[in-house]
Amino acid sequence: MSDETIRLLIVDDHPVVRNGLTGMFSGDDGFVVVGEASNGAEALTLAAALAPDVILMDLRMPRMDGVSAIAELTGRGDPARVVVLTTYDTESDVLPAIEAGATGYLLKDAPPAELFRAVRAAARGEAVLSPSVATRLLGQVRAPAPEQPTLSPREFEVLELVARGTGNKEAAAKLFISEATVKTHLLHIYAKLGVNDRAAAVAEAFERGLLRAGTR
Image: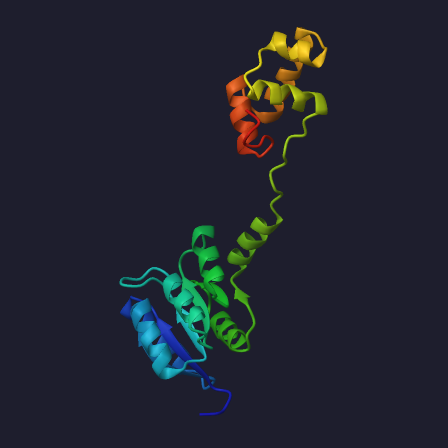
């Protein structure tokens, strides 16, 4: 076994998957499978005992799932790189795994050559993502933040008075404008906040942080 041989721990709750991966990697001189685990708890024990370079980790397993195991490995400073190998590529699966400390995220339909490249890259400390996962992550990063509605100074004054329970006539008197103008400002406020009445406008304004506690 050369110094560059990558020590691999395979973690999956399906024996057929573990056997298949072990056979595949064992057939390449660049890898040695040092152990197999059927859940996250076993993976933690074996990682401590066997010191693998890379852990191929499934996500959904009994006793302890993959994300919990990754977080535990990260928390205890285990040097092994974790590459998630799963059938799930939704954001609710990908993001927690990456945030927990996974170096890579691949899907089980990846061809052997891609798996080999990914494990080698992970062993070097490089991040590896399957194309569909990378697309999802980039899509989320690039998604524009929802725009805050821009209220004019006068609309903001009207909104604050409404939040204090001021009626249209009283608001008009306080702002030295006509009652019809107050109603026009309110219609603009409703449109910008996506609401249909005064109460909803106030609630939405507080929700968006446009109004602060104490305004009422």
